[in-house]
Image (tube, rainbow, N blue to C red; front, side):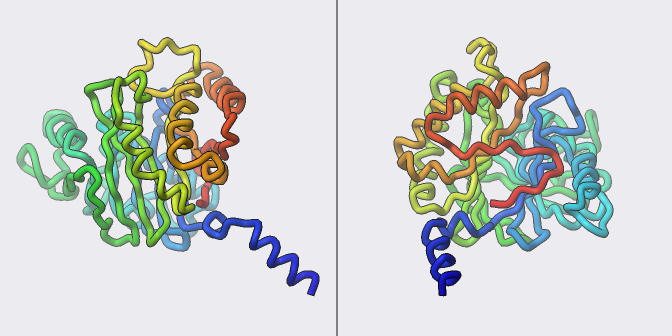
Length: 315
């Protein structure tokens, strides 16, 4: 009887929505530059399945192989994971550290959709998948087309399903050194959500309201305990001059944005929400300093997570 009562108390203390894992994430790459074997790319699937969408694709093969070596994927080759497990790509913006893996691995890939806002897909079509820079593996653009990839433009705020998965996705624009734009992807499985933001500057430095708009959309999900995690960049330390951020965040700017979200969703509702820090520039001791500064500034007591390449995450 005492054990049964203890179990009931534990369940009461544990928010069920956070005790259960809806999503699994395989970080294929987590850094914001320099190391071409570890650039932004995250495989996301419903927990218990191997039907992934890849959120950005800076590094693919190297990250997949390291994930196999780490035991995340068993009894498969890197090519098997690339061809069979990844069902599509969501590309936040067309900077090379977010899509070079997709381009380089395209000869060995299978037929898939590339999801993105039109401002992103236009660059792939007109600048990368052309016969002047690379073979055109898409079904649109410079002729002849090899018809492997299909561009699927997203509309702001409009949810669409991702075929061959149980996932749905909604895109929101971000400001990344205005007027250049990046994208936030809100992924849904049933009534659970996951938010991934590509590179973004703060609204204050970008003179924008893009992040505030995203926070307004997700605040009800935070309150309802339906949002499982937020992946957001912090590229530079607070020592970086504001006029040399190039559309990125620092620890102070991130925490300012978290205060905006907290004002909308409530501080207590924010505490159990994992905030994963992505795209740290690995130059010098940036990684150590950024982590120290984030911990010092974390007056909201946020649950900060630091993804590592080939280390499985559950949310």
